[in-house]
Length: 290
Image 1 (tube, rainbow, N blue to C red):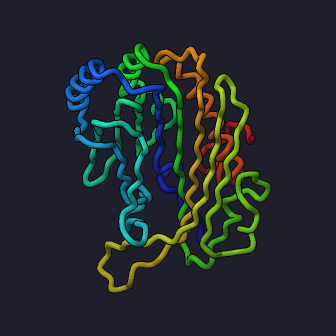
Image 2 (image 1 turned 45 degrees about the vertical axis):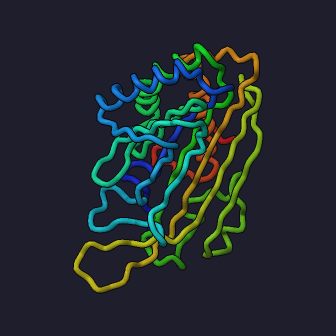
């Protein structure tokens, strides 16, 4: 019995970046941008829809493991992105019945979220190809207030939940995880939040949540056995920069160094949550624990 990764090569279920402006975009620029976005994203295979954006995460699964699907007990999980602003547009790539990519544009904030992750460099480049031109246009008229990056990682135990050994994946000396997990096999949640070295920003917030849930295994084979619960450890990590009034961030390329710093920070955070053996399994062999 062991802990399985959310995907064949890594544990990342979802990753997101967001940019919040100091004020809503001017109406004329916003309407022009929306018109270009409707055509541009359609050409890229995205389906557009009106209304406030909110990313619908498909039921967590384990790729490369045919014959079953993992779902959260009680139904599909829906995660909203609090992007604010009126008249927003959401553009999604849907494969089968799953949303794999989402771009959200409002007058107050832009965001990109994906459930398919092929490494940081490809995600960063994909983000630029989707958001870069619109962010450049927006920041020619308004300032940027917040930049945010989020990762969702998940590990699923392949044996009876009561035999799940959290010490097999979590680091015993982590500063982001309470130590009580070593003496329990129950469900639990922890939350850690703190302000880190701000770097070039005015303030940098780091959040780390660990959620231990029982998921259901949906068996496709012809069997009358009931769906069995599977113990799951989900790790949410986030870094958010508040930029000062004197920030010189005026376009996508000026944001890249901040995004690189955030990615480095979140790699270090995950290294501090999981142990060395698990870090090697997901090829997280470079980074510095905070």
